[in-house]
Length: 315
Length: 110
Image 1 (cartoon, rainbow over the protein chains, first blue to last red):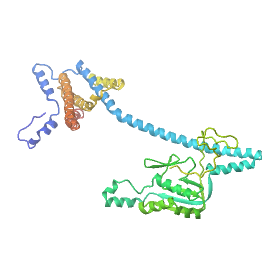
Image 2: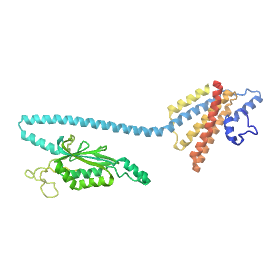
Image 3: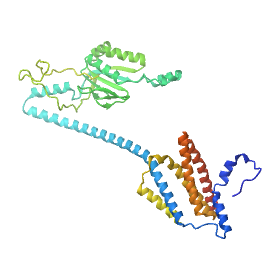
């Protein structure tokens, strides 16, 4: 390799020139020169034991560091993908079980109907279908309202963030949150709705409207916008009552203040699906006061058989 | 040829034994790898130039690794560990590329 010349135009870049032009350790050239001077060939043997030992050492170093430095990222992503896989598997399992419940429920219903008709207990059959209707386990249809609720139009908030850069850091006020749905659904119950579903999920005695982070959960299932609330009831009185009560005024203020889109339509016939998985494991009906007096009650009064309360969403 | 076989044996040993690296040594591993690669490519080039010397190779490998690790250690103490690591990687990387270019000229005449 050529050594540094004097008066080169790139003399000010000696460091880079040195690095680029003489990358080989100068020790090799010096050692070769001294060996030649003492009458030996310039290069030593390539199979010395020390060389082999160091080759093994370098190989082990490469493999070890590759394994050691690669491990953390892969283990984290492994855990993540494993979790994602478990979530997906559980969701598919839950869907399959729900379908199974639906098919079993229809089998039970037909078997019940045939058994009751064979015993000519038509009164019992009528009672049963009435109770099922009230409990919300069967799909129902009738006149009613459809309320479509959606987030504020995005261009409005985008325009706002252009005007005020701090608006982007503030939480998005134009989003429908779980509390909005709760208040509106409660307003619909108050207005006399007989059955309500949100995005196809029936609001039964055991269904709740909750939030998890930014997602709205109805009956523990996440919803995607827009939110369609279907309520069965007399469309005229339902819309009038709803407009008068807290839910209606809350919806009005959402629309006026936060540009949230809410649209109420009266329909002649809407369908509210049933919630087939409605079953109680622990709850037992309280014995009627005529047959036994319940000794465990702490209030000192005899509990009456549960009358059918209008179902309300839990807050 | 025998050192190349030794390299493969070392790779296999590392892959199969899977030795655990202490956490304190992990920041120095990448630098040690770069230094080792520099020594290896320098050695290969010296072989092709006909001036290979095993003592120089071993000493250059050890000193590269030790000095690189020391620079990173010093940088960690001073709070500029990542910058000094980058510097070491740049310098050794340039050397590796020049040596590889020279090896390429030897092997392919191009």
